[in-house]
Length: 106
Image 1 (cartoon, rainbow, N blue to C red):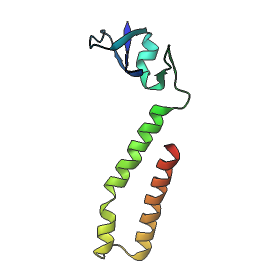
Image 2: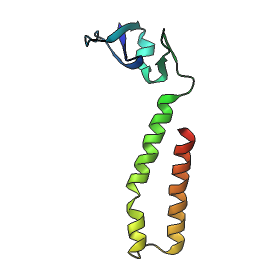
Image 3: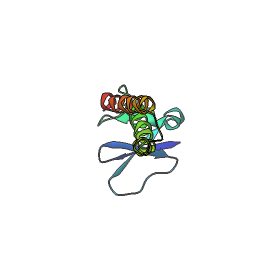
């Protein structure tokens, strides 16, 4: 038996034990829902499938932001002369594409 935790009107995870924190509502759920809890949301009355794929979007946004953070040093390397103009333009285009994808998901 699993319980979904509803906190401040949002699905906030699940577990095999009830959440005793004040204000957290415990909803009994199936093993199937518990295994894929990130694919569900709380609609104010019941747990339903997330047709907007919110979790997947949030995961992709986090991945893209990490790619941007990990590539911040590219600009410094270009300024230090470690990239040609052509290499730098390709890297700028990649970062621009990542930012555009983030905006499209948000």
